[in-house]
Length: 182
Image 1 (cartoon, one colour):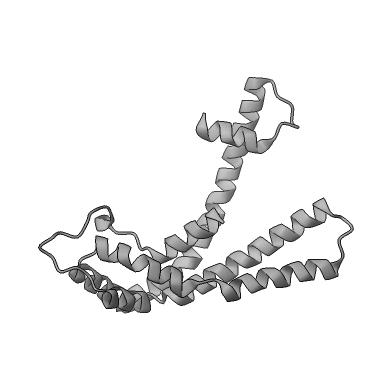
Image 2 (cartoon, rainbow, N blue to C red):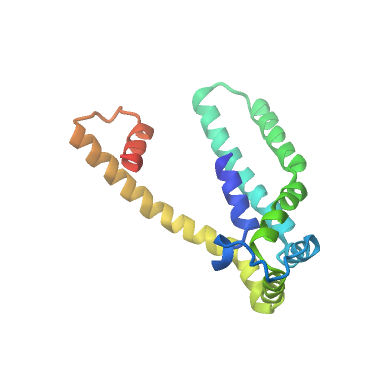
């Protein structure tokens, strides 16, 4: 769920150098309508919907794999029922409400002129291409980084096992936790 929320925020909240600062008192603040226009230009609803659908496919595959390991005799009918229940999640996911909940944060951190500048950028052909291609670029970079990180993580786990004289049965999650948090 944390992963889902983090990914949603990465789509909903564009990175900006001015993000860490409040809007100056001498600048006109962005209105709710300004932010909604930005969301429209950025196709946030569609992006979020696609992202959730992609994540759901991955989550269902992982859930199927884990369920089959935990319950080897589970029927395909039961697995299909689990898939249908997961599909219901996508239909009830409150995308509009989540986007509406982020509007005050945009208003707090972006002046009207900055929102207008972002609208100009994302309305341009280059901005629209950026928005279209970003999910594919992110997936490719993530897949590439995952294999590199997985290899480094395995090496770190093995080094930690050797250092502590632990067997291979030791829980990997505990070892990863120790690697990350010391």
